[in-house]
Image (cartoon, rainbow, N blue to C red; front, side, top):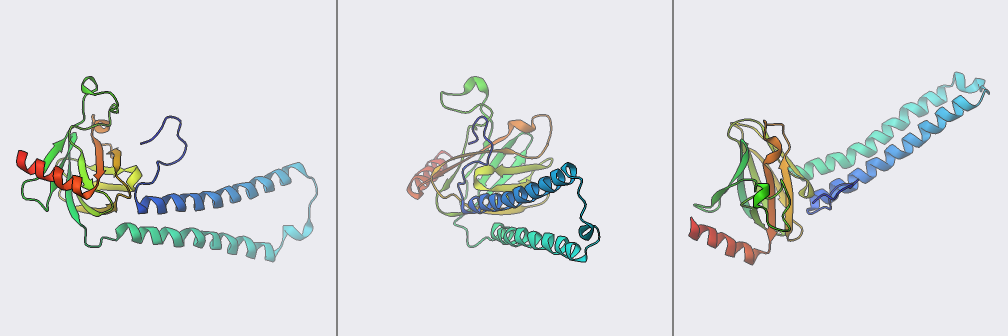
Length: 230
């Protein structure tokens, strides 16, 4: 969950998000170094009247400022490609959940069970209990087992939506008539919040996502209760 006046990302709750945070720090350091060098050159050019005639027409400098940016781009591209392949990797998921976006709520179907599914509506402000977050809580949470590979099939019923949970490193578009898939592993038990990240209509910001990761035994108890209620 994000905090007031927070400057960085949320704490990582999945291995992919940890990799994304490391890549962000790696790239930001390169950006800082380039910005410092460019600022120094600008200040040096403005503050001095001296001119070096060998720099005005130098093949060596042209070679350096052509090769150096190419090397920097390679240093950014290689880790980026590695993370892209990691994010697309889906190996024998333990559980498959179908998330369908509607105007303006999410519905979830646990496809490994026969009759396990529900709609998740945002809890109105006047119905919140102490400790719940305004505009972020739902009446039903997407409960998953922690430390287990989970596959999410994402689609939409009416317009474009986007199923996103920042702390898990997930953002997948929900397109009507199309089934997209993504996968993640919650590294620890906890409650992780997200929202629709597509401008899908007037109540776009009022269709939150709540993922609750619990130990496997608790998940089995929860699924049994849900099936009995169904």
